[in-house]
Image (cartoon, rainbow, N blue to C red):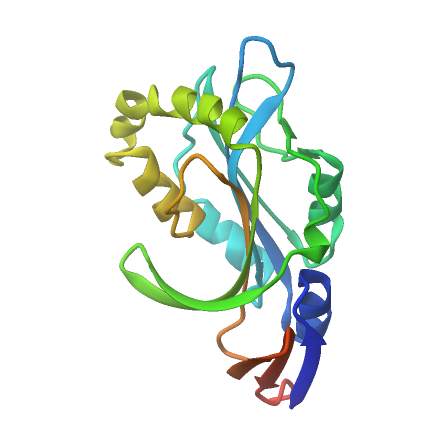
Length: 213
């Protein structure tokens, strides 16, 4: 099966629709004294061919890393565009609460228009072939967020993670190389259905296995 789409995220997701079953959402957030909500530090959203139950079982292995200043939120929902829509609007709720609320503030942006690229990167020692789209926000504001996160380095070591970057890599499943700038990474990883991917003149051509088998 072959399908083509412009390389904006919405079009690529539409092309993959027959193969996608769940949305795996993982977010590291911080609080500021002057702010009412948790502030997004970095979020990964993985559109997956795994079932919601499979993703939730994987998320059960993630420790509940949270204090009054720093938190790891996660959730899994059936495949749709609700999460992206709410994040694009600037706020999202994740139903995991241990301390305080669960409303997370995001920088508003039209995520559906993000350009998708193909990449193969080592995540936690394993190579993952994926299509991804990255959103970046105000560097000055994010430096403040990251300064809060860096102060949690001692706190996270009790969870057998030796640094914030390693925690992001291990639990959000993204390779993060620009700590002050990246807001969000959206990935599409259905490896069982992809034969190959070609980009031509800002269009994406997908060669998929027979989804009926």
